[in-house]
Amino acid sequence: MSFSELIAVYLFLGGAAAGAFTLVAFADVAGHVWNRGRARAESMSLRSSFATIPESTRRYVQTFVYGTGLVSILAGVLCLVADLGRPEAFYYLFLYPTNSLVSIGAFALAFLSVCLVVALSDALLRLPLAMRRFVSVVKLAGIPVALIVMVYTALLLKSVIAVKVWQSPWLSVLFVASALSCGCAVVMLAACACEDVRAMRLWHHFLIPADVAFIVIESIAAIALLVSAKNINSAAFASLMDGALSIPFWIGFVACGIVLPFIAEMILLFAGRGALASTAAVLAVLVLVGGLCLRISIVACGVAPLM
Image (cartoon, rainbow, N blue to C red; front, side):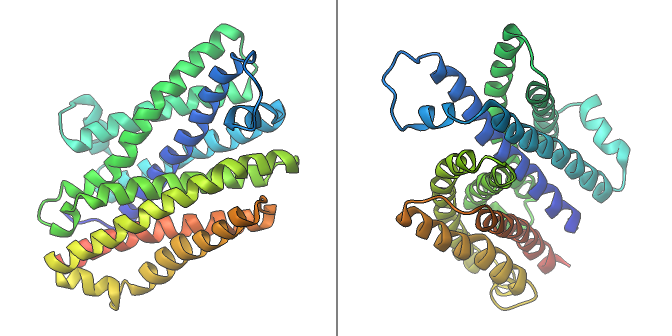
């Protein structure tokens, strides 16, 4: 089995969509639950912060994230179908389900797409209270499904047992952390487009520390994966270090996706203030570029030595 660049794009789009859905759905469900306990003392916690965001701004962020996530998954599926070269193969996954990773991933993507459609409808329309409770249940159920999609983007590569580099357990950790970091970037872009500056900074107050944590985990997993690659496949390791993949790996992933966002976000955290819309947008784009370059590098380093 050989993978093209389209598979890397598919893994990136699916992971970023799942990561963004997880963050916003968690904020929505948590806010709904916590808002029911208003008798408790107010504090500058996640609950009180999100409770002060205007309804129109919250709906805008939800519409942006859920809409972008749905489009990303559909575009990713098109990339997968194009790479397969047989559109009917994707259809057969649903017609004849199995316990294979590909089949499980296809159903997870389908269910996540349904969750995104329901969540998007709730953001665009003012549904009655009974329907909004149902939407909250769907969002809550969609969070573990989104996590399955994030893990699946790594397990799809691990299913090719001939490529030893992809068998590392750190690959799943790396892809999940990267997907959540890319999800932070998507939500951050949505917040940057808000006209309410205070609401934007409240979102950033939640997103920046979360992204720092994801980047740290991502860095640890990447280092562990490189160590295993060096021991298992010297050709794959060399291609990442100073070979044909060194530019997308070092400049795209390490510099744009790890180093620059981490330094900028740590400065913002120590300064104790939110980022300007322009600064946050640049950081978000860097993280997304890094997430894409990571998957391009990992896919290519596993395939190239086999050619």
